[in-house]
Length: 217
Image (cartoon, rainbow, N blue to C red; front, top):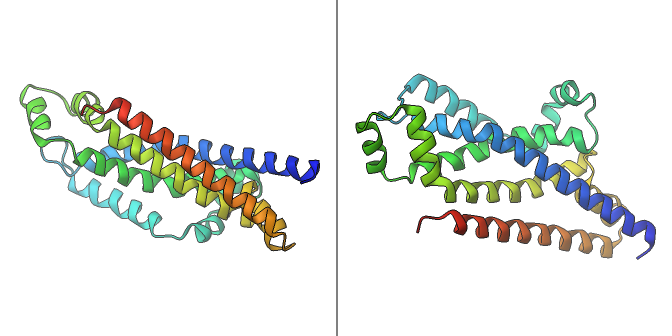
């Protein structure tokens, strides 16, 4: 493999890591509170609000139902408004984030639902406010599940980032299309697949490691 091709691989790998980590960080930043609100707004012992829950659930499910490749195109004006362009690695972070937020929020909601109801009841009976219940009981107890949710989200973003490469997002997906598909260079295609598999395995290993570290079991 030539030095030029090696440089292309390093650049594409960095672009993929950049897209995944940046969009993953934003997904956690916005998806965590959304998942918490989805959970507590339907739980009568904490902060039940059926109307808020129905509205948020409808929006979350609506965004999740849009195939990512369509979402990429559908929000081009919004992407251009945020980043000043609709092409490039940084621009791809916008649709990646929007696609990941509801996905991660539902994983957070599921992790919070696994917290024993007795703990919530004990907290509320002792006078804990909704915020205290969330911060001191729900999130700490659900932390292993939340970390697993982050792991699953990052792995999904690796796949999404490859699709973003199809529309000028850069990264390993773009490299595979330009060389592996358009120029019929099978070796390049296989190399990108191996790199993507390695990234997924690394994310899964780190996620499992952290989840075990914080587990109360």
